[in-house]
Image (tube, rainbow, N blue to C red; front, top):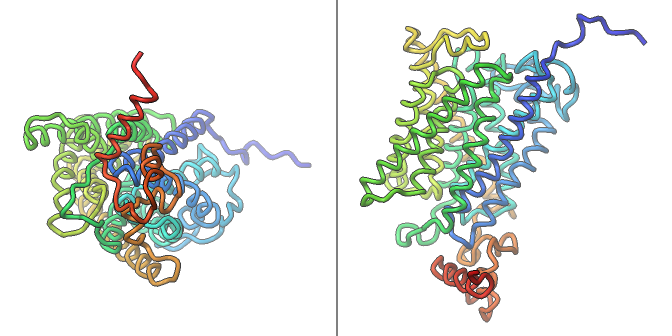
Length: 460
């Protein structure tokens, strides 16, 4: 057997590989974080279904990514619009240098990008909370990833993609993740229709502890989301984490203050969590291109814009159950445009990357490139997502929406046969029949919870 020459052995960095693997794990943690965030905002009878859908997103995307997702996004040859199937079933994806960086192997880059692909549909399906059937959602995730997510990733991050060649700057997913998921949520909300009682009932979050915990998972995992996008344990990765934290903090405080003066001087945990997520979303495309001062502005702008974007639900008369469009689509577009203004050559150069910079560096055309990327991602996502949903709804067995009785019962029991809470199941067990159960209110849930706590968890 011949010995390979030293020139043929890839010069990998073990530190960079380790950081990418840690970042992969951090992003994985974000996905149940999304589930808990959404679960807490929903009513108790639908809490488990939203956690389950986030977990299903990981499983479905892992299979899709293995079959052809990674190849469509990052094959080494292809058109300007989509890759090919050279790496289908992960063929020839092992120890060669990756498309993203010659310092890490293809296999490491593949699994890191798989986590990005898994979180995008997990975010999008929040808009259809409390009324979307599980089986059609599973099918939707697979098809949507293939026809919507994969092409936009290729445009944005593949060396042959048309947005990459144009000069669009997107460090960690302003268009492929945030705009894609937010606009898909809008299409889903419009197609599936409003929840029963929308406009007449008040849909309150049933468990703010879950919302806070989900936010903590998201914030923590975003270090791998933005910092890991440097694909190296470099100073640029450190800067990405620093600006991510600053933007999240600024977004949280901004949203809290807006609601403090609007709602009678109350410091809302919901406002804090929503603002933190908005700040994280807005900084995502610019996290590897801007410094701390700009990050503060990103967070403030995100907190203001996403807060007021929630009113689009009422103005345009659609039911985005968990404000996915307001936070992720609006925040993603805003982040792209701010990146076009504040991107700096000196920040990108922290790891040797050379860019023309944004408006502040005198590169005024960058704002046009950012606008082009946002518009293309928005239009493609909405049109193709709506078409996917329209076709699926015509196929027997894949109708999108649960029937009225299932919605009143709650998707946990009607779709999963399980409940997130013993108290809800106990309430149903004492009912004469499921057909008599029209709705389990959160007031009833809280009474059951208090009774259970008194009976089984007496104070010491």
